[in-house]
Image 1 (cartoon, rainbow, N blue to C red):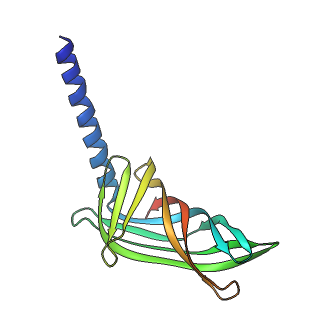
Image 2 (tube, one colour):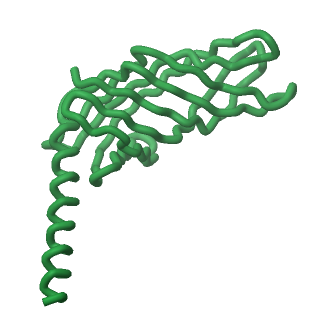
Image 3 (spheres, rainbow, N blue to C red):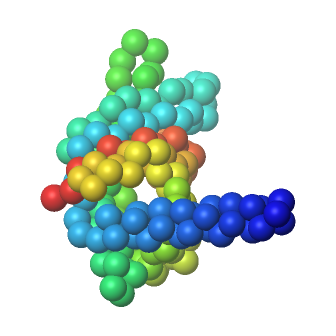
Length: 162
């Protein structure tokens, strides 16, 4: 009897996990606007470690075609770097396309041109609203600070279905 209950419980967990994975895949299909983007990181400069952190709004999009498993994205924002008492704005434009797959709580995008894998943790999975987190390498270039560095940046994306 205990073995039967264990087997039934295991099967129920597997079906639940598969259905959540399929639910996320179905919800992804279409275009999502990045309505809010929280970002934070640190950059090493000749004058020391500088914080790169703030919130950007209306910062791009993500598109998913569930049939072909193709995706594309664009994140556009001005990264704010605090330099003493001044804020330096460094434009960031991340563009890419590739294939995607998902688990019940992750979306994994493999970029076509670089073969880099981007993994997003899904915090909220609603039909018209998603919240994801990731660590994304962002290249910051600026002539004032003589910057040309890649910063591993913590991102929290708030997505609304278009």
